Image 1: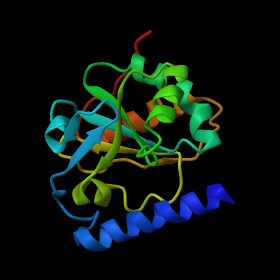
Image 2 (image 1 turned 135 degrees about the horizontal axis):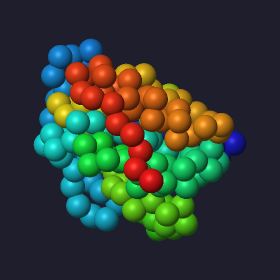
Image 3 (image 1 turned 30 degrees about the vertical axis):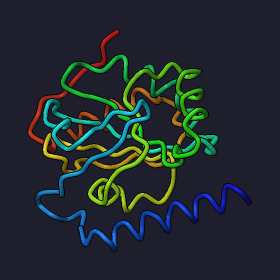
Image 4 (image 1 turned 180 degrees about the vertical axis):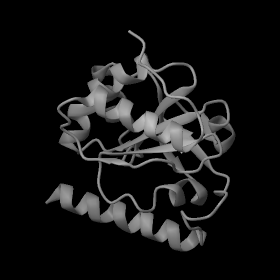
Length: 180
């Protein structure tokens, strides 16, 4: 019941953010955004420009499949070449920062985790209806490729690598291989 309420609250927040922003995911050029990191820093659309692709995994501390896939995400993030980055977004981190940090540490994830943002940030993910969901952003902040929805992938690295390469190809970039 608690999980159902949290999902409904998340959906309501995302819907309000979309309505308030007046933004559409179909726009040619997304709005600028600013997001806060779990470590107290900031992450903006400008941070996307230094990578060909940013893989964004949306998750929550109450989500069993999210937590189960986190070690695979951590290993995947460490195997990415320099032109691709993985960032996570903890949808319920505000007020749960220590829980989020503990889960990420246990999984071995050392990358960037975003915890909140402005209207432009929430508009980018307004169509996400479940966690875990992973989307792909090009250097301009545009969504490319197909999202990965749900956890429990039999071949996590293979599925993610295929999705990354499809998104890179859609952006006119070359395919990658994972580093050992």
